[in-house]
Figure 1 (cartoon, rainbow, N blue to C red):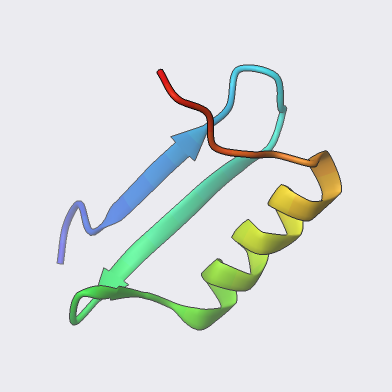
Figure 2 (tube, helix red, strand yellow):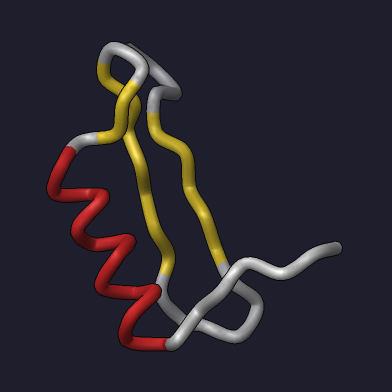
Amino acid sequence: MSGSHHIFVHADLAAILSLQEVQGEAKPYQIRQFLRLVERHALALEDE
């Protein structure tokens, strides 16, 4: 299954986030990693 990972970066963070879709959903541990990054860095969605 080549190329199943999606890599996300944020210009202000050194961390990267890698998500792998399995049957249309990310793996639970990857969602936890994402939520920890959001909380740790007080990230929020903004209108473009």
